[in-house]
Image (cartoon, rainbow, N blue to C red; front, side):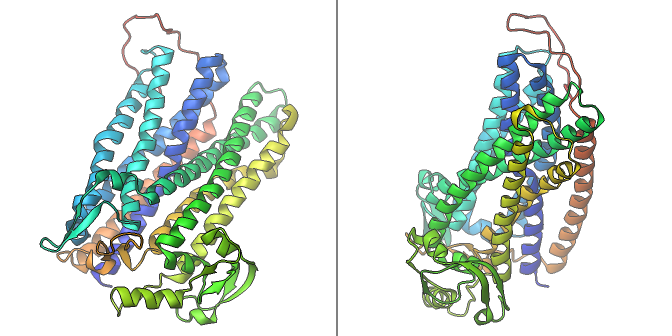
Length: 484
């Protein structure tokens, strides 16, 4: 295997692993902040216990997310130094802003929140968790702005003297139309992940407690958490559908070959159907693809908002790209990956929505449930939105190939880069291969620790604790104490 292929595998493995952790941190930070807000406003101890319980799980996830995210930065300068040389003036700006503004905001106030339970007033302590949650979401926006520039470069021009893309407008980069639709879609998916996590853990405990003792005093708390998570899943699911439709329409304009690959659309069609299931050799013989189950006109609607609109196929787009860019390059993405990752993303999200509806139905009118099948369903539903988010990113990144920076069809086509030219010239296949093997091993070990810690503390349940006695007027000197 060449250095290019190994570098792509390494970046793909580390990125997908890292992003498994990211949506839970983004969504759960807001949900924990809401739980603590409910405690401050109502004084009900169940909300304090839920805050402490899910806050501990949030901290475990956040810590591993930070550790795995650091590796991403180093890869740009080591495996992808040519890419960094070409786009560093533009791509580095939102990443630097994320580190200097958003990450410092979230990490600082996370520390205040962890150590401030017995030191700060309720309202100030509540403000710290909200600032942490807001910082986490701002961090996500800067990262998405950088990624969106790779999908749709704006605010930059190619300098033929330096051979580099140079920034002309940072505001255009930060307000890229791709980022403006990607951000709400990613945040909605993050809430779906977090809602599934809360509902899954709470559903497990509700069934366990109900089967053990129908009069258990913890039942109302876990029922509240289950319904809170389920409602979050429903609202987030609707937001995912709406924002996904907006994103698809924009992708059909900016990266039409990616969306044609997602649909397995070989030739241009009017009133193109949305394929639910297809057979055939997607990669080697696209002409052999047969759509066994499809929704008539839906792809045209996703593309243009019109069920009878014309949508360009892979063969026609391949000819257009070859005429405009490198005539010898293959511009079709990996069809098997893009086609099935797109469907797995949708299917797993639908599974989560079904679980949420079951949770709301079984707990209607103040009821509890002791159905063991629901306990299993609740636990099994936890990884579904994680996997859906991961498949969404696999589709997004694989569908952009063979470009690492896709050309902008609505602006200057001069700023683009084929992936084969972005890899470092100094990195040998052995160096990349060894580092990939080491990182994969380390990540596997960290994954075991993450899983064991999450399961261990989830199985302990919400702690029985006393409410902090400190109020807004208490100025007594107290040492900082780690609350978890």
